[in-house]
Amino acid sequence: MAKLHEGDIIPDFSFQTPFTNDRNWHSELEKNPGKTALIFLRYYGCTLCQLDIRDYALDYHNILASGGKLYIVLQSDPQKIAKDIEEKALPFEIICDPSMNLYKEFEIPCAKSMASMADAKTMLKVGKATMAGLKHGDYEGEELQLPATFIMNSKGLITYAHYGKSAGDIPDSKELKGLIC
Image 1 (tube, helix red, strand yellow):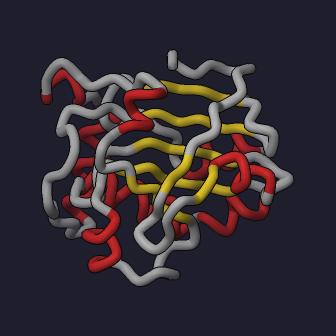
Image 2 (cartoon, rainbow, N blue to C red):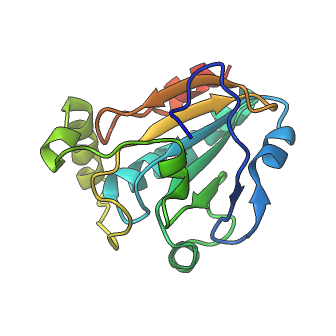
Image 3 (tube, rainbow, N blue to C red):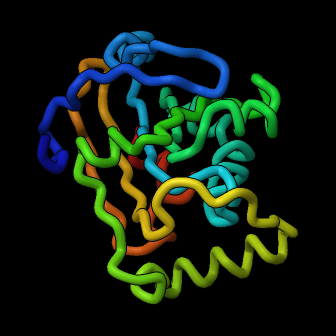
């Protein structure tokens, strides 16, 4: 597969969450008449990922109000996440991709170095995560993984595609709401 772009139809794929197996992406899209965001982060133990997940959860009612839905993809083992959170703890679902098949299929790149992952937005997030008392958990997946954001309609037509240039290069919840509307 190649990188995804606006105007592409996202390929169908099977996925698992910490609490379910063998789900079908296009079937999930068909359940939501609005747009669905698919955001690729690193792994559950990453403090920046924890911060993003927390912030999306806190503002999820606004995403829903705009007719949107959100899924977060992590390179985490589903059993590890299931031990850390309860099934309904988050208002959206986490897709677990510990083998990183989706990251590879959609050509989501890794940074060349830790230094190249950090920009002003990333460093601001590091400060927020520290102030929030978030602690780094288990290391999983690819430490140099960059994020990606895709927004699509119920038919899988991609209306927004962005491959992050740094660890913090994803839309915040307000930006996401605007992209989904």
